[in-house]
Amino acid sequence: MGQGGEPRRGHAYDGELGAAVARAQDGDEAAFAVAYRLVQPGLLGYLRGMVGDDAEDVASDAWLEISRDLGRFKGDGAGFRGWSATIARHRALDHLRRQKVRPRSSALEQDVLELPGVHSTHDQALESLSTEYALELVRGLPRDQAEAVLLRVVVGLDGPAAARVLGKRPGAVRTAAYRGLKRLAKQLGAEGVTDDGPRTLGESK
Amino acid sequence: MGERQSGGGMPGRRHVRPGGTASGHSAGARGVLDDAALEALLAAAIRVEGVDAEGERRAVAAFRAAREAGVHQARARRRDDWRPREQRGLARSVKATLSLFVASLALGGVAVAAIGSAGSSSDDGDDKVRPTAPATSAPEQPAAPSSGEPSGSGPSDRPDAAQDTEAQCRAYEQVKERGNALDAAAWQRLVTAAGGEEKVAPFCADQLAGAQATSRPTPSTPARPTPTPGAGNATNGAGNADSGGSGQAGETDNGVGRKN
Image 1 (cartoon, rainbow over the protein chains, first blue to last red):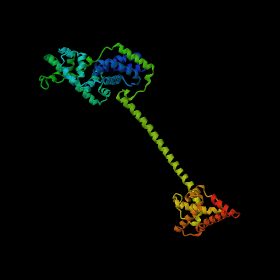
Image 2 (cartoon, rainbow over the protein chains, first blue to last red):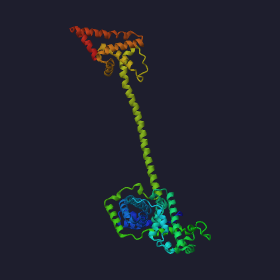
Image 3 (tube, rainbow over the protein chains, first blue to last red):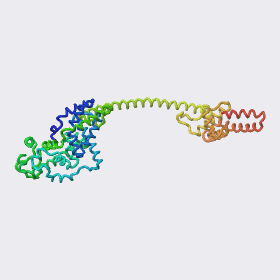
């Protein structure tokens, strides 16, 4: 949720990203590659949450548009993440529309909760979530919560930027992210407890 | 990571979990993860570290193509402006100030232009009034002394159609004997009012007789014209019937009348 406003993931390299984008806008190809490497991990993660296995294709489309419209962009590194996320989101929504895939509902939630999966032990659950499992959890959230969580946690946008990407008021997005994270925390915690209750308690104390 | 996570979670923002752990919602309270830890977990799991080279190559190729096509010169749209809010706000306020300034200039210009045009239009109005005033008063002028007409209200108060015709008839009567042409426009109006060139004389006679009966008791001038046109016509008719040398005078007389 990060309502305290602590530095978010991704901010560490925003300066580098901003410089790379500026050079790329001047025509520097290598700088564009740097920007790609800095942005792609979060962008692709976000798209995985949105469109699942088609994320790579959608990201590729998004990057075509990004590289074409780069000259229009104005802003710094953080701004570039927001801008590129907006483009990726539009491509993802187009993709979903084409597929006639309805937005995720919480119908999956129950299944996700009951998944024993690979996380049979506490260590696995808390030390590292497998990508698939984390995605399933996130996609089990209501759509607005899932997107808010992805944009803020995975892409690393701050509240106003995430709100701008989603075209919503910052307050609504903050609430959605908060609820989504709460829910995920409960699910993970519940899982930990069912798997290995005492140890979880002991360790978290 | 488990160690680090619990270590990071402990001091600050742990959700309270003292001895009475399961007091509220059992699983929920116990299971709530530290916010930052959860976010770190999710990010680590979902972010796709290690960029695949093929995707990067494609993106860079697209970038190169766009650069060479000159697409990068395109102007930023509103949705492309991701500068921090203050900067955007500053740019916007500068833009707003500028446009306000330009708008005020334009409005000022319009106002000045309006003043100018208002002045010139009043001049125009004067010009428009002036030429018409002599045109109507010219035929009236000769009639005025004879009839003592009380149309002192001036040119702005335009006489109604009947009075107009009356005045023209009077002018016609006056001018006719001297062989002067009536003002062309006035004549045309008189002709249309009478319903034909040859009907002007009787028409005027009727008009003047009527006007005299209703308004003016000064018989001197109008009394004379009334019979005159009739007589003139009669002689004309006689002259025509004769079609001889005596018709010459009638012819010329008639000619004057026509010409007028």
